[in-house]
Image 1 (cartoon, rainbow, N blue to C red):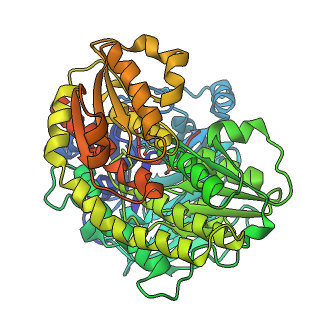
Image 2: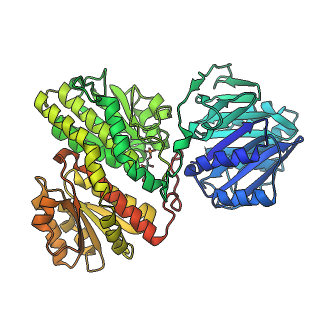
Image 3: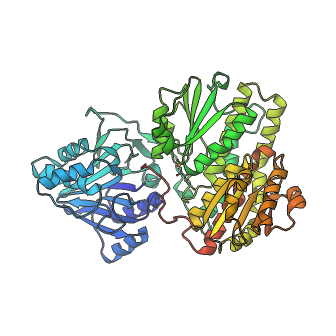
Length: 606
Ligand code: F6R
């Protein structure tokens, strides 16, 4: 979580740091701070809450200097407060940190024995104090930083700045990503390429255990063994101009609207327009695989649950799906001929990465579906399949979800071909349906007003239930997650058939029940469950196609019509109303749509 930026520049650095923090704010927004070295003196400014508070503070109390580090925080140890905000400073050293120092209590106890006092509740302060301690014993800043990093357990990315040193930064990576950026007579460090994108397009990623000693015209990287290491300098292509709201009120609204375009982009990349098709997964032979283990978190987990239906029905391949935080500690046996498949927008989610590492050496092959090709999960996979969603800024995932589903569906087709469960005609029909999908999604987006009207009704509810059957069940789960995370309304999802096994007790005239039911083979079953809800005065919002609404909309509270799409692709299409209902409900409630409370976009701590 938390975002880190560091600049050794030739101009005043405070505005540059603040601009970079804006691009990192998706990682956390509990507090923000910067430190600079000006005429040899290290100083800092910190503010609680959104970055705008730090900007305001800097207007009244500016910070000069051409060397600086900055941080945007998602609180782990210690409440959001100015005292707990980064950079943490101890004597001549300032530190910004992403991750968790697991042994900070032991280190604190050790420092306390040496008479060192503490001002904050954070684990990070220990890093600053330990470095200061080593410097007071005569170590140079670099030696002190190295000795400190060697003592730290946990997952972290760190940047150090020192009093009296306006041409030196030290950066360290263990478990949390950190990139070094190369400019013209300037150097940068950042949590990700997005932070650095307007400053430079030349970056190298630090690897596990790396420490970088950086000046304006040099960088020396040593690996975990202390040996000088060369890290490839890559030219990245991130279009910084695209990281804006494009005229929309929120990033989430923009990202929802982008879906026809980005899904089209993913399809173009994988299957093009011609008849000579290469399905993703080149080099993988699904006829040599007996089962798939899919692991992810949150929305990406629901993409996996959806893909399970597809893999099992279309490719006849058994799939187990697990949330990464459970999988990694359960130590499940991984039988021979198992493909381990990980799905992650950021590619940096700590639990998913740990689950991948658990499977390394056990599964026959490790594949991932990711949005950030340079991410740790992508780099540690045998095969990484990008989803081409573009940068997703809104904390609630939208376009990444539908692009994940699109790429997973293509992988299912590849599996089905390899396993002989899909003939040429079947493949052609699926590909035609996929190619029509962006257009169909556009039609669904055109139902915005109906969604807004339904959302106004939802916005006064205390609890909302979502129901779906078959492949619409994972989508119901996703709809409930979207609603709760941005509108703060309690929402739960159930497989429609499960309702009468307990949850129906929740239903009364106060509880809206959103039923996701395209007119498919399971429609009648879902409608029966819907009738059971209405018989108990539950207020049903039925989302279906014209045929489904024609058959079953009598007596419902509200109905929303979706265009018709091939049955297999309904989870992708019906993601649109799930997202828009949540979005408009949040707007009606006046919550912070793009940065909902307590959340962060990239969950790099477990
Ligand atoms: C919800 C959401 C999260 C993420 C989850 C996994 O809208 O965005 O549930 O899906 O934190 O993140 P990634 O996909 O980056 O591994």
